[in-house]
Length: 76
Image (cartoon, rainbow, N blue to C red; front, top):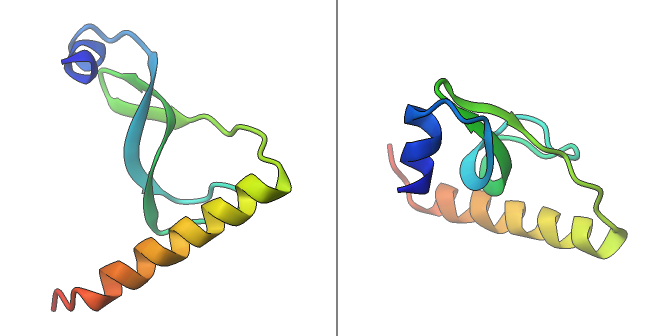
């Protein structure tokens, strides 16, 4: 409901939303749930937050797991 409200009311609200990431700390071509500004047009921008070394390692690991899982689905 909150996501729909932000879009319909053009609120430019920061919400944690999963979207396709093009370049987030060097990662891309994967969907992550990240703090995102959402308005009438959908995703306005993904907020880049500072990550320490451990957080960055875990994020990279998550991206690798997601990509491996997607490849294993053999959607062709």
